[in-house]
Amino acid sequence: MKRLAVLLALIGTPALAAPFAHGNAAAGKALEKEKCAACHAGRFDGDSGKIYTRADRRVKSADGLAQQIGGCNSMLGLNLFPEDEANLGAFLNQTYYKFK
Image (cartoon, rainbow, N blue to C red; front, side, top):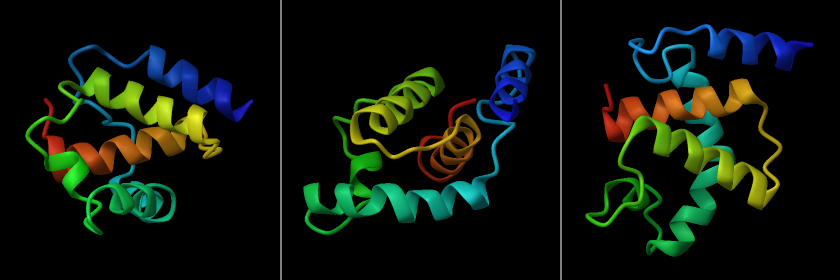
């Protein structure tokens, strides 16, 4: 039921709203540290932040960021709920990407 409420809220969000406006960046920061940082650090000489700031990064838009988060969640079995993905997106966008 909670997932349905989140999905309906996302669908009803106006297209002009800031990306991940419904996410909690503080909660996303904790998730990034718990679920993402170790894997990313292993690929970038111990600096997990480099994956987000590298010149050839894959993510070029807010939609792309949401898709990347969802892909990692699915492929790696991170067991993130939709609200967790929104929180993670809010943190990553606020900290690294700055999509509007």
